[in-house]
Image (cartoon, rainbow, N blue to C red; front, side, top):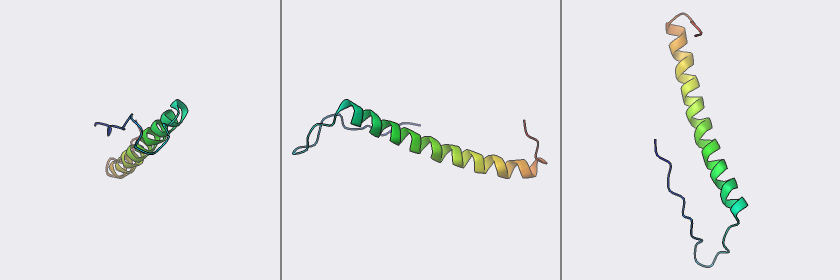
Length: 57
């Protein structure tokens, strides 16, 4: 799985984001992606558990 490349250079006419803002934005993107993947895995795990008798290993 590859992450989308975030532009490091500021857009024309906009002030350059601070390092804090860049890191905050990156962290938010990673967290969103992680939660989405985690939720999907959880849903898949729940459906597969019902077919295996709920074996929680």
